[in-house]
Amino acid sequence: MPKAKQRMIDFWMTVASFLTDALVLYLTFCLAFWVRFHSGLLQVTRGIPAFLSYQANFPVAILVMLWIFKARGLYVRRKLGSGIRPFQMIKSVTFGMFVLMSLTFVYRDVSYSRLLVVVAWLLCVVSVLLGRKCLGELQKFLYKRFGIKKRVLVIGVNDLSGKIVRGLEKARDFYEIIGVLAESAKVSFLDSKIPLLGTLDVLSEVLAKERIDEVVLAVPELEQKKVVEVILACEREMIYFRMIPNVFEILTSQVEIENFYGVTLLGLKPFPLEKATNRFLKKSMDVLGAGLGFVLISPFFLFLAILVKRSSRGPVFYKQERVGEDGRTFTMIKFRTMHENAEEKTGPVWTSREDPRRTKIGKFLRKYNLDELPQLWNVLKGEMSLVGPRPERPHFVNEFKDRVPRYMSRHKIKSGMTGWAQVNGLRGNTSISERIKYDLYYLENWSILLDLKIIFRTLFARENAY
Image (tube, rainbow, N blue to C red):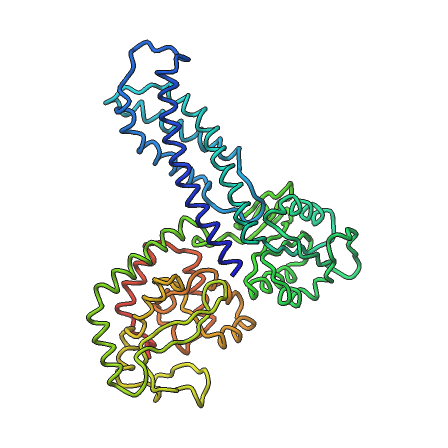
């Protein structure tokens, strides 16, 4: 639940940043017009133009600036560190103003004051930075109000790990240092304020015992095999991983690089859906799609419910616990397709091609993916998405998380009614390793167009639908 609260705060803070920037830019353009033509600070030689002629084009200018801000990563939540990025914002505002000034040379239907753009640039730099500073303070307040802090484990006892620890202490509004693991038994941690939890050999036990959100590996010379073991251990527990790279990794790696209080950190690039703006787009699509779906198919939905009820004894809907985003469980709803108490003797097992537990109507519903329609309610509740990795039962998740590399990565986003693996025939009792490859492809290459493609292909997906 702390992760869900943190993600909700980060999401709405990103939305607030976008809306605040838009409002600040509008007010700044208005103020720049007053300073240029009405304040008396600057000479007016060609008369005062109509304010409405400028105001009519403010929305276009604001959209251009917001697009540039997004393209330059100002709405991307940082994994480590906190606060605003003044230099990046100044560069973004400056570049945006150059673009706007260039447009004034192209669009000549109205004569624009270039000096007004210069005034707007000076005011925008100050106002945007001030707006972000206020939002940063609000974020700190909300984190403190809800008791949200990222719990960080540092691996390594050396000068670099010391810098990381000091940096985390400076950002104590956002981070709590759980402790340090030494890379071997030959070293000891000198700072008594930070507990030494043992050596790298007990990493799995520490991750399972402590509620850790991020791990920072501060041993650049650690052998590759052990680095991979650390990464996989973190993924099994759905913990974000960072490391200090060696020179070769900095020059050749395609992963994300970040500077944290003077220390270069290397981490896996975030998935597209870890960005709040993309989450907002996907959430909007889910709400709109599920809402329209309920309205359009409600008569057909009722007809199927009657068929299920008359097919065999038992309820219309089948409710089952599944594992979703962040490893949290939720109750997934489906049309019942099997006889009542079908797993009473067998326990949790995969459905087979000629499974005798299915009802006649259940076989039809599964073949045409109609048994999943009630999950539109799960989508509207925010427990699922229209498209995403299919959720599994806790029994199978606990079995696969230790056996299948990167299995838990699929739980970084909401589970879906349908997914890339399913439309490619990987459902039911098929290769879990192959299914994970498709799930990871979806995570790494998400787009609205890919979601629409998967939804369309779901209408015709029949392979292994039993």
